[in-house]
Image (cartoon, rainbow, N blue to C red; front, top):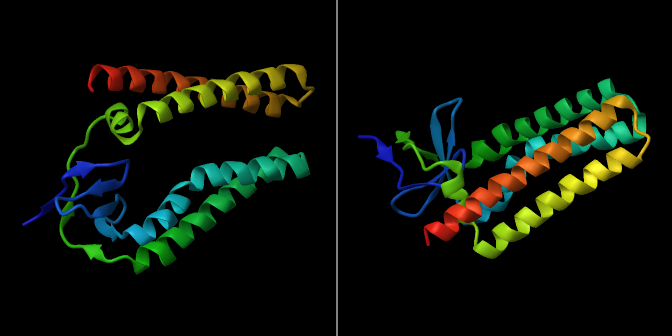
Length: 175
């Protein structure tokens, strides 16, 4: 018999009928139970793309070489991934025969996860980041690659803000 989940929480996190948080590893097809004590560690490890981007950005700031910064970002990502798989996941109890259910769309999960006030704050911060980055890129004399990356960040933050406007509308319609 296969264990099914009760609730899809995020990309790889689920909550079963007993209220346990389960991480589903899509590569090994195994489920791991994350205790309340381990949740903070999980969220730290789950931010590895953002952490790698920050390392790459800081490396570029000091080296002014985008190949070195890309290498540093990839290396940071791989190191964090190694620690996640070999130290964090290895210590978690495995949930036997765990099969995830198909979950709700991302906008539904986001609406359920955040309060209306938090969604509004996310929207404001996303648009401030978008416009602030675009203005900074426009008035600064950056090299071509940094200028492009700043505009990519601005567009990404703008899309993120628009997505959360949609989440807010969905939340208001489906109280």
